[in-house]
Amino acid sequence: MLPLSRPAPASAGMTGTWRTYKPVVNLQKCIDCGLCWLYCPESVIDWEKGYKIQIDYTYCKGCGICADVCPVKAINMTPEEGI
Amino acid sequence: MSFRIDQLPKKKYVVPGNAACAGCGMMIGLKILGMALGEEAVLSIPASCAAVVQGLTPKSGVAMPILNVPFASAAAVATGIAEAYRMLGVKGHAVVWAGDGGTADIGFGTVSGAAERNSNIIYVMYDNEAYMNTGIQRSSSTPRAAWTTTTPTGKHERKKDVALLMAMHGVPYVATASIAYPQDFYRKLKRASEIQGFKFIHLHAPCPPGWRYDPAKTVEIAKLAVETGAWILWEYDNGQLKLNPPSTVYVDRAKRKPLKEYLKLQGRFAHLTDNDVKMLEEEIEAKWQTVLALAKAFPQRL
Ligand SMILES: Cc1ncc(C[n+]2csc(CCOP(=O)(O)OP(=O)(O)O)c2C)c(N)n1
Ligand code: SF4
Ligand SMILES: [Mg+2]
Image (tube, rainbow over all chains, first blue to last red; front, side, top):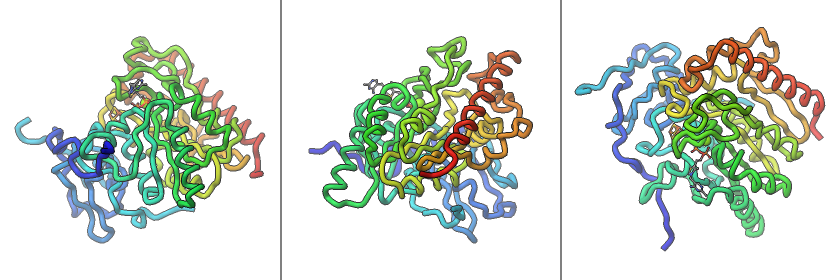
């Protein structure tokens, strides 16, 4: 048998539990530029031009890069509850 | 060639829920690699953080065909894949995705051999400037003065410039890149994929735990490396060496941001004195003079 792994979500588990801060997007402020989508190292931001963005909190590790690269500060890092 | 962000593929070549640290710069690079070559590439990945992300079982965190290979063999394995593709008439790219330790130190002989043979491969060295996966040990690509667990008072030796060494092999294509400039990296991968023979891209990729900074700052720090002149974007394409934007602007020393702005965000440089910073600035200037002299010496494509 070949030792094969297949691409699938959660190869390291539910990585959303790693988060201490949660990126919360204000879609009113968002200018639909896609930079957070481009730079998100986890691919947990979905973006379709014209529809703005959506964040998958099941796997988002809360690194905060999206908030840092957002040119209009539409993403806020808010502390997770219970931490 | 430039591209619009909204025209990039939406497929997730980096799969959510993988083992990389929060804010890992290398993963931004892998994403762009997938977008540029994902449907045509077979990767060889030696031991590294990338190997952990991709090599868990039963699930992998990277959606590309990958061979998980022993340390020094990556360039040789990719050469074998490229040769098999040629003989079988398969269209595709044999790509190596390896760290700085796996390239500048452990795999260097194999990389140099593949370059000298002009193997038809694309070799990407993602440079997080130490052996991160095993707990931040210095590599020959760790910059001078940086703290690592094996350089507790700061590294005494200067950073090995692997990209320049590869260019001096006289291979068809060598470039530097940064995860802060995905457009530039994407274009370079596409350019590399058009060229027959050995291609090498040296990708600067910050590492939050290894460089000791807030993971939110990965892109900001990578950008500052370029804006302060510490990391120079250039490409050597069939005999011509030239600077790429935005580094073209930073030829003028006065346009560069103070190096301190790059260093002060990183705990690995926290122990530096003003004199140390000055010394590093001079070393960076000397590197610029070398690159500019080479650009002058290699003015046009062969
Ligand atoms: C032959 C061999 N020696 C040592 C190791 C242990 N090892 C695994 S990853 C690694 C560090 C690799 O560093 P680098 O190439 O810079 O990649 P990074 O971890 O920084 O991504 C080492 C030394 C190994 N797996 N195989
Ligand atoms: S140690 Fe550094 S390079 Fe390795 S996965 Fe973590 S952030 Fe990425
Ligand atoms: Mg490394």
